[in-house]
Amino acid sequence: MLALVVVSQQEELPSTIIGALLATFSGCLLIGSLLSGVVRRRLSPRTIMLLELLAWPGPLLFTLWPNAYVLAASILPVALAIPATDSVVVAQRLAATPDRLVGRVESVRSTIALVLAPFGSLAAGVLLDAMSARPAILISALPTVPLAIWGLLSPALRNLALHRVEHRTGVGQAVSDDRG
Figure (cartoon, rainbow, N blue to C red):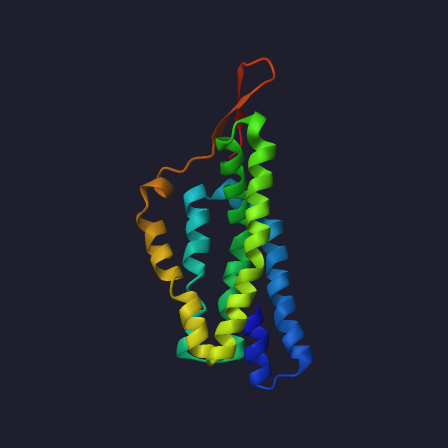
């Protein structure tokens, strides 16, 4: 998002246009959230994961056509995919974590995420300060290509199934729950 603001300012777009581009991204996140349940019911967990993995290389289009509108349009598919992917990842994490450890595992995971979050913006700022937006976006988006290829070829994603999840009740008996 920082790159979008910087590129838009370099192109001397008015603040209202920059705000509209950022709002469009946020709107796509909201639409993705509203559609997440439908997407989870209609698509397999693997397909949902692949949608996001294949959307992330989109900003590479900016390196071919350096324009703020191209950059904005290239990140919108990611915004639509993020909520559904998050629901798959969270469900998988909860299904794989024993009930008695969910609180501890989630607190460690969220602590790590919160500690690392500022470094993404810092890295983007350093890159954008050290070079023009085109190579900065290339450096940021290029690693998503092998991730997308990994996702397509990964047996772990191919075998990902969240349709049947086993839960343990307080008395130790297994209870089956459909979540797909």
